[in-house]
Image (tube, rainbow, N blue to C red; front, side, top):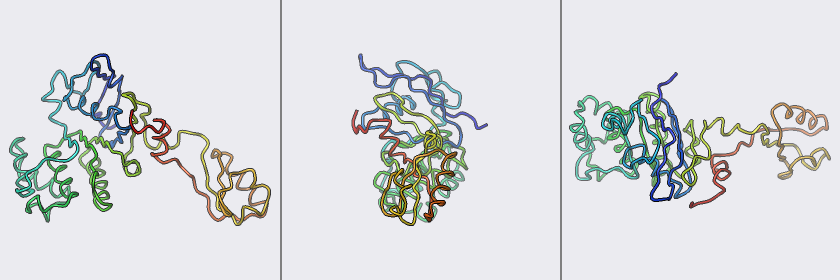
Length: 300
């Protein structure tokens, strides 16, 4: 069983009489990559600040590697890396010199710098000045800074913001690698939901300061017993049996069924001399599920 890295136990935040965060609870383990999503104004940034100790808790507790952040902040936060929006760095200096400054603060060895540079894929450009870096390279350098001290928890706010498709792919592969090889727990807050579902294994949806859904990505998609299937057939007008289903076009129907009944449906179609060319599950995307849980609100 992987070790628990982050434990949020009913954390709350009030400003005056207004509740910003209400009874937020979350457990995150080594190797987990969490998609932390919600409408604008839902409380994502405030929650991250509470986890990092940048805001005071009204109630509840946060533990990082079993250490209460309020009782021993310095020790708890020593195993955390974070990038909120864009990483800060000296553009007129080389990537290596930027890392060296951080390494000197944390008393990190040069061998660890080399290890991290290779890990984030900047070996060939680390001695170039940062002002010559692409946005994707700057993001990777920022992550290199954040993981120099071997954190167990990495928090990233919009890490793919402004990246092109190649940069997004590089970022995705890097985060998967960090979770697996460095055994990090990673929280990614982003509005690019289709991207998050491609590499996150857990999801937490927040609305108006409350968790509306917190589960694994797999369980979220398989939550309903009835699943939508898209079946490609020879012709939807060939037999009355297809009238019982949702006809999409001349060659496709949608069937809502559970796994136990879909076989009988397929058999009935075939016995009525209708050819089947393809059957695929039409699973909801994270974007669809997000809209279900938030009511489609953009701003709370």
